[in-house]
Amino acid sequence: MFQLADFSVSFGTATALRRATLDIRQGDRLGIVGESGSGKTMLALALMGMAPDAATISGRLTIDGHDMTHATEATWQQMRARRVAMIFQEPMSALNPLRRIGDTVMEPLIVHEGLSRAQAQARVLALLEEVGIPDPAARLRMFPHELSGGQRQRVLIALALACNPALLIADEPTTALDANVALRITDLLVRLAQERGMALVFITHDLAAVARTTKDIVVMYGGDMIERGPTAQVLSAPAHPYTQGLLAARPDPTVPPRDATGKRRRLPTLPGTVPPLAALPQGCRFSGRCSVELPQCAGTRPTDHALDADRSAACHLLGATP
Amino acid sequence: MWYFIFRRTAGFVATLFVVSAVVFAVMNILPGDPALTILGLDATDDALAALREQLGLNQPVLARYVSWIWNALQGDFGISHSFRVPVSELIAERLPMTVSLAVAGMIFTLVIALSLGIGAAARHRKVGDWGVMFISQIGIAVPAFWLSMLLVLLFAVKLRWLPPGGFAGWSDPVAAMRSLVLPTIALGVVQSAVLARVTRSSALEVMRQDFVRTARASGLSRRRVLWRHVLPNALVPIVTIVGMQFAALVTGTIVIENVFYLPGLGRLIFQSISNRDLPTVQALVMLFAAIVVTANFVVDLLYVVIDPRLKART
Image 1 (cartoon, helix red, strand yellow):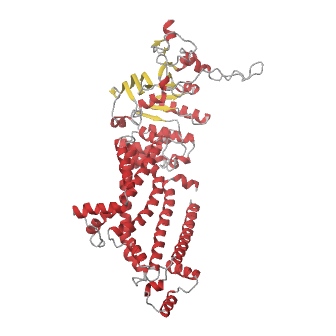
Image 2: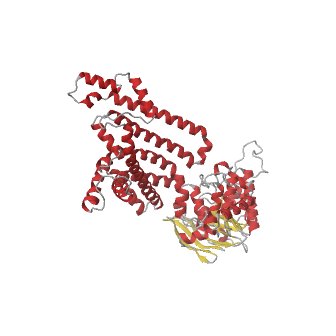
Image 3: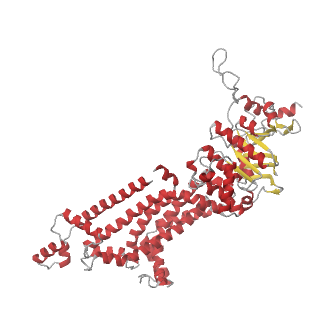
């Protein structure tokens, strides 16, 4: 349904997303994992046609076979909500504070499907029920500030689902929530995707959440998609040095926090930080921070190496040792 | 919320009393003997003394203040020295003129400023935005009286499209509106320039917020997002300025009415000051002050209507 081919988003000389290739089909549950600045939010915005005005877009994006790469705002308005919808990471500020919940969720139904207020209200009640909001009839008349963070995120999910999108993008939907609330929201997303046969793109840096939620993942670094495959396989046997480092940095609950001599153990970390967009190396984005350094790393962009039928990683190491 | 409204109302009444005391004090400190002004320099001492007695000028200041307030509350502002009729009649006669002008100026300001301000915000850092900023800068810099004269020269004297001044009342609505066009523009240009800038910056502020992105992600058109989501959230600073501007518009009528020969309160206050007509000046200054205080009071109440979060907090 949604296809990206060699899709890039850049600002002048800085490239936020480099030659991304992605194929999202009905029923997919895809995790996009990476640090801040890895290009995962830019990818989501590109799928919504909401890349900033200053961005230059190249490559190809098709939705249901239609080329949307340079589609007009009016064309995108027809796609948003009905084909692709998105929920954002800050439920506290993502709802218009001056509008009642009901009016907010109703709006796309009235605008896109031409429903009357009464019809829209009936649909909204069903939606709020579906996303697990208790006593929806009373919530309808409430303002966002009267709801908790978890409730607001549920309202935003209801809003995104209002016009039955084929794809729901969740951009770090649980980052701002308590751990137990976050868990219930991710489970809700999976349930909704399964029940509705809707594709789900789950963007996060939370590896536990991605393991719980998705069937496949794409690991991103510095605007590149560096590794992809079935979630369980990638997480258990990462191929790219960056993915390996990312997984090693997870706290392991079976390892006691202090070692035999009583010294506090430190979590392994990746050396350095993600460089600013304009300062990323031209070749492999990870070169300079990587534990291995081949001569071609800094200058040549590694291509995807197939590891399996549905697994690949972009690293020169994999090309060198077949 | 009711406590908030009660507090604001109490503050409103208290402010009005302070204002009345200040107005009364200033009028009484001013040099000049009303009796002498009325009777002229040739008046005999006996006649002056008799008139002072009749006007109550011999009573202590506090007693005169209390009786002024007491009568004013009942709509009696005394007799005008120069027109020899009750001040309340003078005001009632001229109030519709000034209210028409101020309301027309406010509507003009709101329509021009909101569309220019929101339009500029939508075209942030593009030609349209710069255009609005440039024009509004000129609008702010132009003095109203000078603009009035230019408007009269061009549209009344040269092109003869509109009357140069005067107002014959609302019995002929078309003529009334025609004579209000130039004064309204002269009165509203500065205010709409200021408000357009406030609207623009307030809207830009709101457009950065997350819920605007949510609205766009719901497939709403840019226009709908701007007018239905951005504007309501940008209203609090706008309403604050509009409240101050309404006061500025009402006092601005003094200049405009004099330039365009409009028989309103502004012209009346100007004439009364020239005539040293103390009761009229005092009543008018009080009236203008009351309008300003009321405008601010209404703005305070509007905040609660605009933002439901304040209702919960106050």
